[in-house]
Image (cartoon, rainbow, N blue to C red; front, top):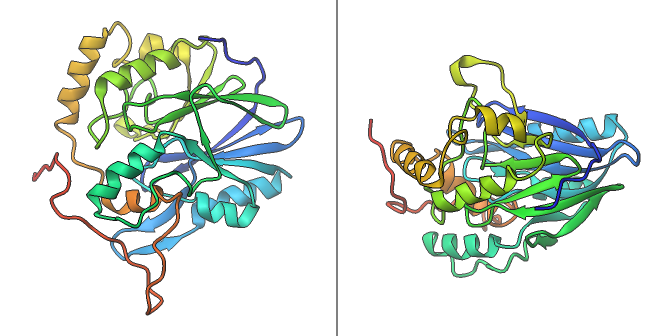
Length: 296
């Protein structure tokens, strides 16, 4: 694999405590151009309320630092939070992007939701990135690395020396992402992680989640070298050992509480359901659609 570019972008992480998600603004300090990666639209499942608190924090940071948004990017259709990509596109005018394999996720969930009218062609985004496609943020080069396993559509955005890996690798004390969602595959996840860890050891890794093991402060930045040395799901592991560990662990995990809420929003690029005749918006909730129930 080609070496990561030596340019060092500025990276600002925003930790969202309700779902343990990290949102990013990555910017070129020379041109003040930036991209927003994996923004969160606030959602309270108990009341059904949505809000833009998290996204507005990002907008405030961008305004305060005189940045211009070039891209609004999602690494994959998220299962634990709503994407704020559509809202941020309205506010900034910047194009949205995601990996091209999102169409496979759309087709899969179109069946789960019995949603014949869903356009499963990726047209909800302005751009669909292919594997190894190059782009730029200001004068800093970027590259897309197709990273399936957690989902069929997961990608890593490599921007200069910064790799935004979301649900592949967590912090070194937290292991790796699950691979048991519809379309997930532990063996594919291992191979995706292996490709990311083929980058230079000094490459900065920015994860998409941190669940604060043992109550420590939230963290989201490591390096390829640290992950290879210290991550217990990676260090000294073979592919077969990883698959065995990952599949055994995934069997003990309940589905994310928002997966059925979030996917119907996120496979439409963060667009909420259209208002019905009374002006209200309604989520459609399939029963008995997913395996992996834990009753305890």
